[in-house]
Amino acid sequence: MTSDTHISIGSVTAEGNDMKAEIFLPEDYRPAEDEPFMNERQLEYFRRKLLNWKNDLLDESRTTVTALQDGTRSIPDVADRASEETDRALELRTRDRQRKLIAKIDAALRRIDEGEYGYCEVTGDPISLKRLDARPIATMTLEAQERHERREKVHRDD
Image 1 (cartoon, rainbow, N blue to C red):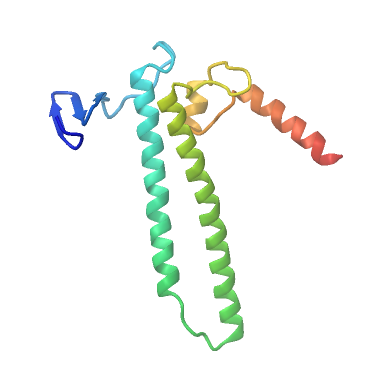
Image 2: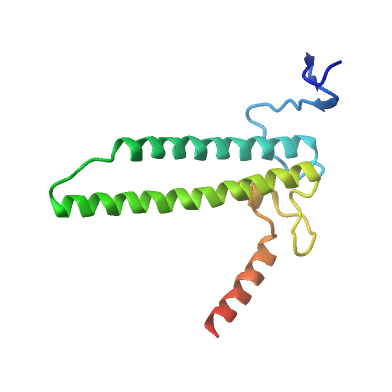
């Protein structure tokens, strides 16, 4: 088998020398507390959620780039030009935040691949499924995050 061969048999896919099982998830699947933590279905659920989120952000970014390129025009009125420049600056700041968010999504996807996803980077404890569902890029339990923010606030006040 050559390295660029792609074969799909049932729910197993073979690409090159890597065997990767495709996990079937019903559309209405939600991770549940009564399942083993971070089993294959939960990992696949979060992988898809992260990938969909990333794709949405990238689509918005492409739309912004197109709009900014098309929107370059000469506006004679100084107030109108200033207003448009302010809008553009705000849009660019938003896209910069989204770029940073995409980096966090990529890091979460790496943690899934490495088997570290869903566990607090500070305590090693499982992060609650509700927290991960609401914020799939979370790297800390709620308690560890709150401690971190309290310490950050104390240091900021110094």
